[in-house]
Amino acid sequence: MVGGAVRDMLAGREVADVDFAVPLPPAVVMERARAAGLKAVPTGLAHGTVTLVAAGRGFEVTSLRRDVETDGRHARVAFIDDWREDAARRDFTINAMSRDRAGEIYDYFTGREDLRAGIVRFVGRAEQRIAEDHLRILRFFRFFARYAKAAPDAEAVAAIQAGREGLRALSAERVWAEVKRILAAPDPLLAVELMRDTGVLAVALPGAEVAGLAALLARGAPTDDPLLRLAALTAEPGLAARLRLSGTEAERLAALRRPFGLRPSDDDAALRRALAEEEAAVLIGRSWLHEEGLGPEWDALRARLGAVARPVFPLRGRDLAGLGVPPGPALGALLAELRRWWLMGGCLAGREVCLAEARRRLA
Image (tube, rainbow, N blue to C red; front, side, top):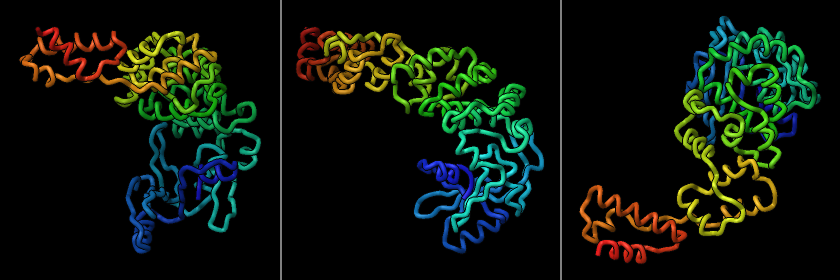
């Protein structure tokens, strides 16, 4: 067992994914797995990775390897049988440990000591590790946000400052995947401040302002919402396209950035009108971004938003067609008028009441 699973076991944290390494080439791994009755999926043969499926769960098994050639984004590897040499190509000391089936830990680069001390340190020369894969710059901040207990490693900081422009060569998807993990940490503020101080934040998220994130965290906003934290960090208009967010992520980011509009003193009718337009989760997230969104009255507003059932306008086009309204612009206009009337009434009118209003307008 290698990497993060060993690190988190030693740290007393929940282990999410378990990865394995073997001193065998991937073709042999697949042959032996199939002979043992396991499904073997060649998910990354060029890099020596095979996914074995056991009891419905996938486990990555990677052949020991060394880098033959790297360009800061990709690596060409050769398969080896030397555990220490394989560990030497990993990013950080805390990720370079392994554990055998008897429970013995193999730690060639003081990973256990660094984990206890809360130090995120590159394996070997930091400049070389970054030159091999520029994404390791962002990975440093991801692990710093979750494991650091001490001042940042000086060699790492210097190498990151010197190599930060290499981030521009990475795909937007890879950058966002790491930024999202950084922002998903329980408290990412120190890591993001270090990103700012090293110039990395300006490369990864141009225009980002740490003050917005600091204010959001000070309000006690939820810790499991990286998109909310991204919205607090930067208002860059083209961010979703530049980071190539998924459609769902882009829509939610845009929704979070819209003006909030509600106040703690608003009545339930105002809340129902807002909920008819937006989901409660979006409105609650937007409330955290409001500069005044701190205090018991705002907590009460969020609780009310979460407790009020989301109203749904009860009419459809077919309902008006049933009243004799022909399909076309006039039907759409009448439906929109009826919905506005329903909203003004606090979203309380049911289907029959709305139909009666429609008949009145058609009379």
